[in-house]
Length: 250
Image (cartoon, rainbow, N blue to C red; front, side, top):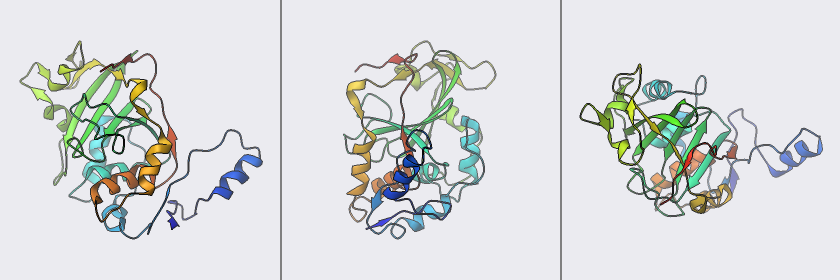
């Protein structure tokens, strides 16, 4: 069993993290990548060309620009792999979404980047979707969008917004997110209430890491690729939604 190398060429091991803590460098660092069988072999052809270039995208428009810069066709896993580490993640088993979880072993995973939240699912009905939420106004009004994958050609910047439009006056996001209204300056963009997951549905990051550790790419290649993209390419952190977001109770 091998450990995935960090992008700076160094390997991360348990001893390294212990030295960090004993050296008095403050709170423990993010959780290191998971050790997986044959790391650097089976996933390399799919994800090596996706490793990040440039700054972390912090808006929906910047994510679309990142997608357009990646080698086509672009998968959801490739987009996730392109994000600099550490990633801050929240996982939930909720199925009441256009992107439902596929059980505890393939939960819906939110990637939290400042005011931007992306969500993915390793397997199931939502596995080919990337969902977007960008905080626009306090405390929890967000601009929302969605893209289907694979992406085979360059996208217009507004593609995540036009994909969810229902006519000209609302989006399919309004089926769950209340008080939807047009964005003041983005044509086709709509803003609505954001939610945080029910705490009873949350999946601990350690449990998700265990799924990567036992994933069999011969049986579930796409699912395993997503887990590698999320957890195997650098350190990750357990995230949490602000309590200013309304609680989504199913």
